Image 1: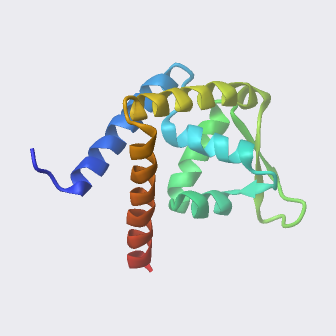
Image 2: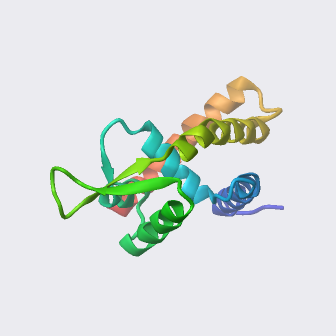
Image 3: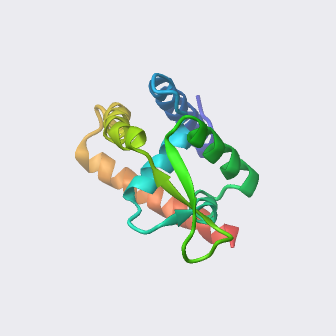
Length: 142
């Protein structure tokens, strides 16, 4: 089975996303929604929709849809920015804060499964190669 590197990247990503979505389904979240909640949790400054669009490289309608669903499920609230009334700041609710630790636990478990049986030396080499691949691709996008 001699496949291109891109094939393996795509398949690994699809399997990881499917597994994470399956675990998050219990709490009525998708992987994309969970990533945004974790970003909000980890970000010490106020966050608006444009910040999320830039961070995740998503379009305005995509982020707006995700935020609407999160708001409808009471995971976030949006308030008018005190600095600029044209913007809305996004804040976590108590409900989402309580779930963050569970989501992080699930992500750590998935990563453990991902690297199971790989010796530390090989894993370190793999990470270095991944960084190089990432940097190569990032340079080509500009």
